[in-house]
Amino acid sequence: MNRRQAVQGIKSEDRSHQTLPPSARDLTRSEYWWAKARQIIPRGTQTLSKGPDQFVDGVTPKYLERGQGCHVWDVDGNEYIDYPMALGPILLGYNYAPVVEAVTRQIRKGTTFTLMSPLEVELAELLVEVIPCAEMVRFGKNGADATLAAIRIARSYTGRDHVAFCGYHGCHDWYAITTSLNKGIPRFNAGLIHPFTYNQPQTLENLFSLYSGKIGAVIMEVPAEDPKDNFLQRVIDIAHRHGALFILDETCTGFRWSLGGAQQYYGIVPDLGCFGKGMANGFSISAIVGKKEFMKELSEIFFSMTFSGETIGLAASIATIGEIRKKGVVDYIWQQGRKLRDGLHSIRDELKVNVDIVGHPPRSGFLFHGADGNESLDLKSLFLQEAHKRGILFGGPVYVSFSHTEEDIERTLDASYEAMRIVKEAVDEGDVNRFMQGGKIGTVYRSR
Image (tube, helix red, strand yellow):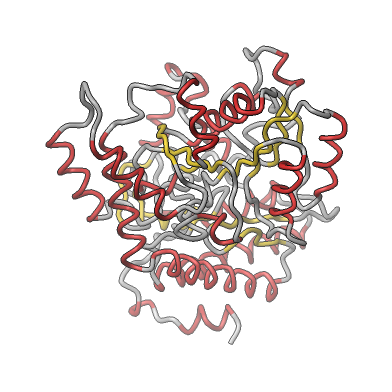
């Protein structure tokens, strides 16, 4: 049975929730808050990836008010099935009871104190137990804090300042200099950081030849594509052969690929690992973990923040990891992610839309191609517009959570079929603009 037949075969009375028809979504209050924000908040948003230019301005709501499970409600009362899931931190679901209860208990005890909390030790012991490379642990609040600490450790340990990188690693100077949003950053940073290409180990070898004896850190994340020909281990071996530390940035993959992250999933042991996002189901905390030999460098490195030992994030992380271990969360996310991807592939194949569903079941994304074969943000904009109108909140990455049910996946595929059908119609007519009702999506920044 193809997707269209499957859609037609599901009776409306079999669903406990119904998406609003496209014309019924009022965004008046979202626009009200946005008008105020633009006057008093630079760029209007605290997080660039949440701004209106990353969605379909005029069709996508700008402000969300509450969430439950994988469902969110905007300030105008419209309901959506959410897939960015707060850009990845919501692993279990919004308002997930065991985590909320743990946090509520801790709030009553205190959120931060004059002295340290035993929760720091409890969570550190837990991370050492479940993450392959973790022998010692320090905490921050964002993934960028963890990558900053990792780079400082590597530079301190090796006595070298240069960094080889692959992927995205946050907003601190050492990495942000590589983006188009690099104003205010001393220019010398640009000469210290060098990109290499995923699944092409020779590009890393070339950097070590070009900057012989200067590179102290090799940092990378696992992107949309699986490593080929033992790529990850080959990168580790290249780094070690040239006297550099290997850092795996697991801000996105941690606790999603497996309990111990991508390093456990792929069977490697980095020197240092960076974790954040899903480790506390939406509460702010990150961790830099690694082998004692390297982590001890932090005893002589300035890495200290008022809220790095804040108890709410610690309690939330302990509760989150407990749920992951007890309830088979990782297996469930992979299972539901496969169902979503398989369904989207079927829709694509039936309608003959030129789109790839890139990534892995726990974290994927849409890559639409234009007539020239290159990525088309225009087509992606149209798809997002039509999905949003039907109550499905897609964005950049597609994260499946422990709260996405069979019904949620089915409703998502129903809406996606209609959205892709309209994309196909626009392609056949050769005029995307005629179908657009809002602004097209753009990029947060350009890499150099």
